[in-house]
Amino acid sequence: MSEQEESFNPEYNPLGAEGSIDTNAMPWISIKDVKGLYVKPIRVSPESGMFSLIYKLEKGCSFPSSVYLGGMDMLVLSGQLSYTQEDKESVLAPGTWGFIAANSKVNSITAIEETEVLANFYSALALLKDDGSLQSLLTGTDVLKLANEKNISLVPNSSTECWERGPQTYDGPGEPLAIASSNAATLVDSDVGSVLSSEISHPHFVDTREVPWFTMPTMPDVGLKLLRVSEETGFVSMIVRHNGVALPHSHIGASDFLVLSGALGVRAGPPEGYGPGMWFYEPAGARHEETQRVTDEDLIYTANIYGPLVFDSGPGTPVEAVVSWMDYKTMAEEGGIKLVPNSNSNDKTLLAWAPIEAN
Image 1: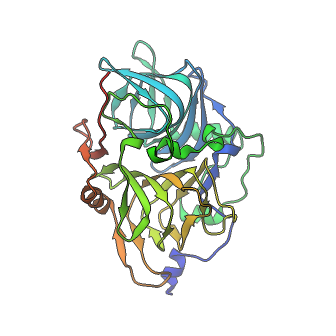
Image 2: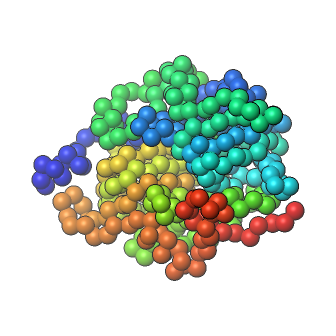
């Protein structure tokens, strides 16, 4: 292996899953400007301004009307939300996935019952008052400040930071997610059970259980639900059912994912693997020789892929395949999966389609 290849895929054994964070071991941190809103900060990018978190809304409380200065994707993990806009109402049950395009104004979202949501914000969020004027901004810097106040070390943003990452700093009591004590596969897979049904009237939300699975030809034991493909950035969002062994691969772009069910085994991790509530960030350049489930239970996780994956047969072997957004789009189309353009004409996104229920 050349010196360049060795630096691209160094052999090391730091702290196990060096780009991960156990959200169950984290506290809920209140957002002072919004009653009943709490967050678990996960990642903040000082370069792009993107930040990831899990938020909780108490019953009867609302995420305020907001203007999204960058895009945002979300997945309802537990509870129920009510959302009304353009004289239509949607009830967002667990398993509902959504994408909000940049520069969109979104009305308030109210918790019908206590609700937890995974959210990736691509830039800052402008929170509005009832009269439509600006109340405050929520930025990556604000999220990082919340983490620092609780002595929470967030996931590294680059391969170099992964190598240098020290022990996790937060040692206080954790508050597990609701999915930690249940089979969260039911959120996204109708074959393994049922939960509350969503009633969706808005095109930027989809019930993931209504989106069909398809498989990659080279990995028939890995099922995918394609939720979003951006022809502008190459970003891809999906749900993965990972019951086989992923071929050796390198991440040319970064990726992130949250384990919903089962246990994921990764290099240098514990033999029992990582279960529901474990959030991973794979920085650009990350390498995996083998990724697989470690129990008989379906391993299901969310996945955002921010660049191509390069597959081979092991370190130093020739490239066998490069998989990008174009390939995911083609595989979905060949599998009969329907993707439709975002109704926002300024956004070059294709979104998963499922029948919208009329109220």
